[in-house]
Length: 100
Image 1 (cartoon, rainbow, N blue to C red):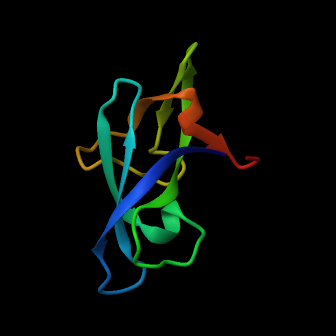
Image 2: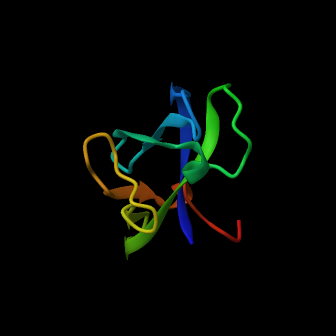
Image 3: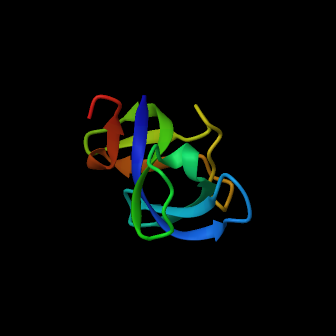
């Protein structure tokens, strides 16, 4: 499994379980993407209301380039940005696997 390294930057909703957080990452072109997601989808750690926190966004690789990957976050967990995007081009060092 592949993951985009991202940062949870703030709590959006804690009125129930699970907590909803705002996550951000930067693509290959320097554009910031924001994703609102449930805490257990982006982290295996116990939720603590302190930010920023490192999180991981599940994805699949669509294409590999010399310096980057084009990834799709629609699989495996239907993650999309606040703009409705699921396909991103990211630096190779912004991607990790289960083995790392």
